[in-house]
Image (cartoon, rainbow, N blue to C red; front, top):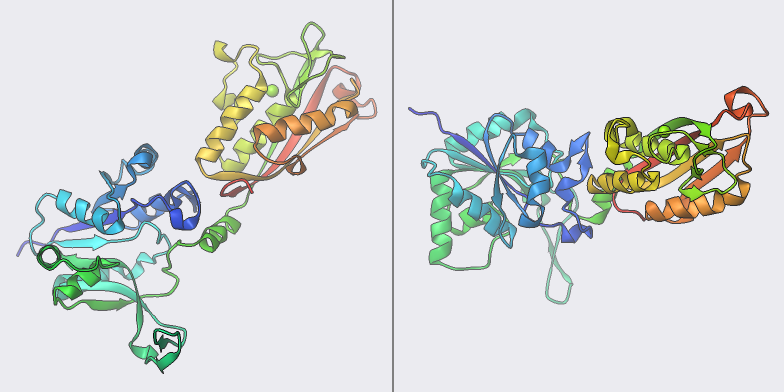
Length: 381
Ligand code: MG
């Protein structure tokens, strides 16, 4: 007998409005990649189809196009799964279709194989976790009618695995007997009178649904970075430091405007996000960056970080300079950098120090700057 083929459908069509974030939660950073990548990775080796929100298709392509086929998601999760199922090239009745929520990256794939096999044998299997809390059934006034037998109650989860023939029959039944759209595909089969078995799973296979869950992800995803930069003085050039023009000068030698403080900050940001360094992003061999304002480079780096879902917790900079005197400019620098990073001035701090006439800084050959940055996942608070 031919071995049943295995198809995986991941509906990621929602834009995460329930999470209260504009960006789909599936694109949030997670364990060194993103939530969607983690989900796709769970099913490596199978044919994987992902329903994506058309508006964010490009973002999903960049991350998973090498491992999964992308299909435009529908207006609802139900429609998304159905669109993808119909886009499959005629799976045979005995082939298996697994549906997994893109918001469940915590699935432990250890016993997935046994679930596939059970589905092949019984036809329909869904992951479900035993009810933990005591469950009450109430009447229309919110008064308890009775306590339910918790041993018989399970929370439906995904993966849900069905023989393609049964899923097809369930859709046909739904079309012939239009009813309330079920909240999962198991409900669709149940309505068609098809038996669905439970694969007991853990509550850990939870869904990232509400803001608190996203915040939980965030606390697991604080990232620290540091940056350091030195430039030699060049009295022929204007002095820019911390994004601010300092008329006293002298200026600094460099390919761009040589703003060492902004360069250190850029390196700290890139470092925290694991995205390389400033030289890699803006090579000093590239004429495009000749005399470039470093604040423009900072804007681009910040946009790239936001794009990846990072927010700034805080940044702290120290400029080491024997001259000129920087104290009068620190507030302006702080405001300028906070503006670019789209945050309040209390999250950006800039200090200046001399080196007591020691070293190259003390000899006024140049100046140095260091920066430390803490990022977290999410939007700027
Ligand atoms: Mg530099």
